[in-house]
Length: 531
Image 1 (cartoon, rainbow, N blue to C red):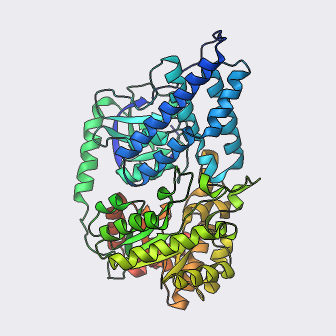
Image 2: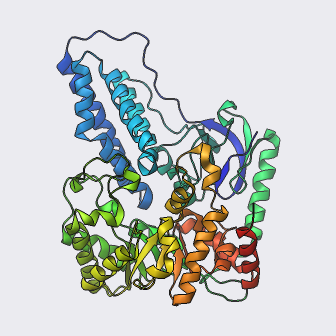
Image 3: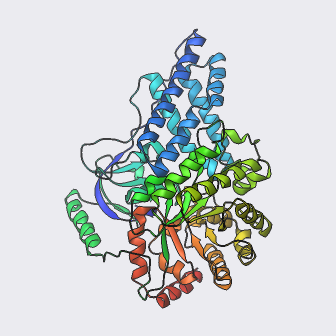
């Protein structure tokens, strides 16, 4: 079987079972003259889905909770309910109306690309759950075969991945998806081996035994009798690896700070040796809201995270939303190409109070807790944007301000950005897709999103060189920071910190400790010149 793309490290084996199939609409449409009753049924089904996803979000933490909250908000969107109701009034039964309205919304999101295209899986899940509720069919989702298994699916919705139990699910393999899909992100957070964009995986029957290698992307049928030996070998290999603790260091002591990507205070529990927070995503506070949270609400939420950091430094990213990550209270108009529109720091061009209020709240929380807090702005393209953000942060009482490098223009002008800000943090997910012109969710283009692409590494090297010249730190907070094989390369390029989920820290710490700085520099030179 052709290999897929390994997105979460680890090796295991076991029987595979596919995600339960979605409900199928009957061939014949049921006759109904009670249009009001059908509208009520459809509305009730969407409300059921929204409540179900909200319940799952409440039971989850961090990234998973935020993703589920966003999916719940999509199911509860009044625009969706009204679109379904209009189709019912035109004579379509409830289940058909839900299917057709969500199909239309799905096509619109897929056409936009970028972040919104990643949300089509959420819409598919909402459709399947609502239709199953309307038809009285079994609810789609993760199977329960009664034994540890490899979960296989065309793709997985947030509700599927957020509730996975690592004691039962051995690994995850999907036919679609890319290296930065939410399946990849959540699998890494759970410490599960995962492979995406794996051709032919759906051709294997339930119960077939397979080997899954999340490092190489290999998924291979194996005899059932070999499973115990493969798992035992994987356990021995993991147990035999040196256990490194403390700060990130190369074998000869060169420091590379190892930090956490978090969405809430709960995400700080995973690794006591993490040296701080390299990316505090603040979007989750703003999800599912028709009005912006008050300054006091924000202050309380930020203070909870700062206190949980227990004296470790925290880098907070200001709201990363906009036309491609719509939040109802922003009231932004639709754009023909939102991935290139008003998003990130650009939202302040038309909604300046949102950023101003957030910086005020961050300063108040930092003052109240005595935390060491830095702020950074997403989607910065020019020196002027960087300078304006730094000036606003300083005026709000926040002395340390940086920017994210997610656009090639910012990477190419890194030396000029560092004239006006204190640090750079490279978001390799967006930088990769903008550099290679490849949608993050396209399995067909996944090879272009490989973080080993020389063009991407060259831009990272440009940023690191600018940091050395300015005497200022340059870190990475994208998903590539969690790749152990890349950690020595990044160190060799001159990156000063790597930020990731807690589950990824031990392997990255060990990879750095296995190489001297000279080794790292040699690996970096080799990576930059690969075909």
